[in-house]
Image 1 (cartoon, helix red, strand yellow):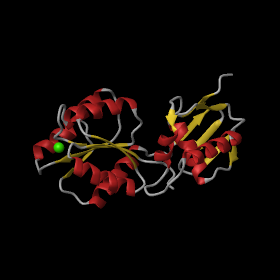
Image 2 (cartoon, rainbow, N blue to C red):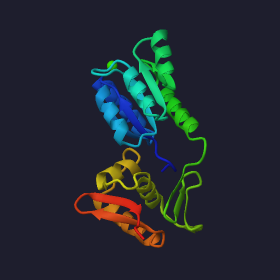
Image 3 (tube, rainbow, N blue to C red):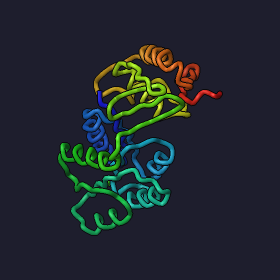
Amino acid sequence: MQGSLMHVLLVEDDLVLADGIARILTGHGMVVDVVHNGLEADRALTSRAVSVIVLDIGLPGIDGFEVVRRLRSRGATIPVLLLTARDDVQDRVRGLELGADDYLVKPFAAPELVARLKALVRRSNPRPAEMQIGGLQLDAFSRRASIDGQTIELSAREWAVLEYLMQQASRVVSKQQIIDAILPWGEEVTLNAVEVYVSRIRAKIASAGISIKTIRGFGYMLEQASP
Ligand code: CA
């Protein structure tokens, strides 16, 4: 398990290539959302928490350049790695000028893609990710959870579930989303296991002024408890 999950939005209209890239990235423990055109990407970026974007330039509808332009015009600083189909200097310059952070020319080697994405995320998070809601504080760098300064002990999976719920605070998340978010590729966890993790977490953070509401038949929502 890693301390902080990387959520990648992959925007690629070539279905075979998209599938291949998604497998590589999930194989490296990243969580990958795949969309196949610019409008879907634009929509996803206004509604989801993403750590980094892998963005093809040539897309149906609005192209990758326009996706970056809209993203930056909203003030979003999420790092963007452009995929360019050819070694075209003009494309690269235009993409970087619009606010992309890096690019790769297809075809590229998988390890290079992974290394560049990690570097982009590292650069965009120079400080350890700290989150606080109510009296509960999570430090993803030291993997320490505390309530009003008192450390609480969490198993690796409890930590991962709680970290995800904190990241998605005040949003309803399904049990399946929790499973997708916490597990590296290839592991299996049941919906029942998620319920067990959540009930253990609830017991451990009971004094933090946070509630994890059950959304019946669907999932959970973490929020600050009303006083
Ligand atoms: Ca394309």
